Length: 177
Image (cartoon, rainbow, N blue to C red; front, side, top):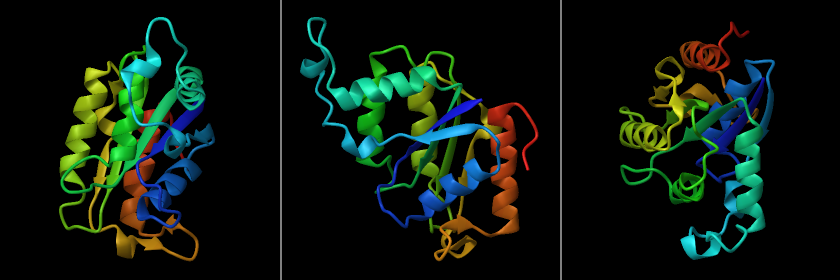
């Protein structure tokens, strides 16, 4: 199985990066993390019928098409989806790569409510894009900061790791470590 991961946080030492690394470590699937920070701002004029999309957009679309499943990991900014992640999804809306693609949504925040707003927004956006958003593969991890180890950049909390195990098993359709 090939998993493409989209990380809504560009911070090198973000807790969402720890969630992403920890989730991917729980499966034997081949995984790639897309460089969504390299995408230009969404502009439909750059992707018209008579023009090829910018190279980073074409690469993202190709990566989604080649993946067996997609893992979306994101923080919440101002009760919403981070701009960099929304920009990536906007570039994918008009293409068919997400059609029926098994997709997991993991959100994490230091807040006691987690990233609940972004979580629901992402799930709705991905459903509209015709992704197969797997309910058992979606998790909103609350109060994530003390559940990670900044030195290793991974999740260390047993309960949070179990949530990730459950989500990845649902995404991969198998048992994970």
